[in-house]
Length: 328
Image (tube, rainbow, N blue to C red; front, side):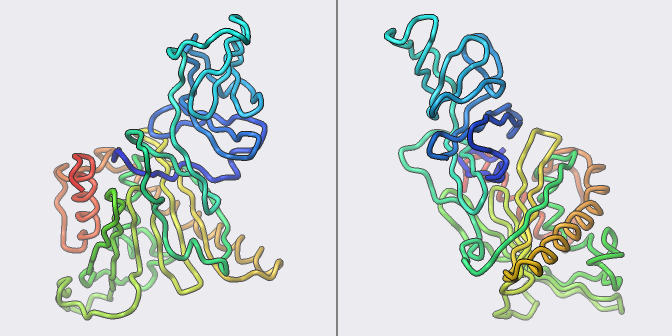
């Protein structure tokens, strides 16, 4: 995992008021809950007293209560009550649970995976997510694959006519021009890779190198922002979003969203349903292939023989490795 980054880990609707939710993220069991004001909280799903899952407990005010002996913990992980010792007794600091900083925006929950700070960097996002004129629908799916492999698949412009020959890859456009890439740098290494690409039918042409591709004011077709969000820019009011939530070293949960501007209730429902079904169908064409890749985790040097069309994947690997090593 890349340390010291904000990761999308859940959708807001997955954590309801009044009930803790236990999930595995980043290879660790975690518990999420909302306080009496609806503010999100997260801690390791483990009572420091006797090792019981806090997610099996209940909420008492703003705190989560262990189901075994009634210890209560606030959103910072501080133990506020040991019932057996009495309410007037001071709670030893050793009973503190590990808590994670979390933020909630755009109907998504971000988790800070790294060292605590006095001030945290801004949450990574895309501009259109802040557009009040757009609405969205969400579909989810789980892949038996490391999150880095799932991300790379969405940066892979070479696979489209083969994996998606019946959907978005129709036309047998196997020759890849470029692709051209530039990178927008942000604080804390939450950089954005922008990708322009063009696939053509084989006619004996020699593919253009990235620097030979005509420059255009047109927006990039694909964007990826570290550590785990992706954007397919279909149009000014039509966007596809993917959040890749790492479950553990072999599983990733995808949050697939279609953003659009259709707000008329019946039409919006139709667009949402079509978008969700289409997204799931297409990504499962990918899933069938990606889950077979070895090694499970992608790294900068894993023995693969790459080609010019793999430039976005190479750039992702290079920057990911640098961030893991603390070299943004």
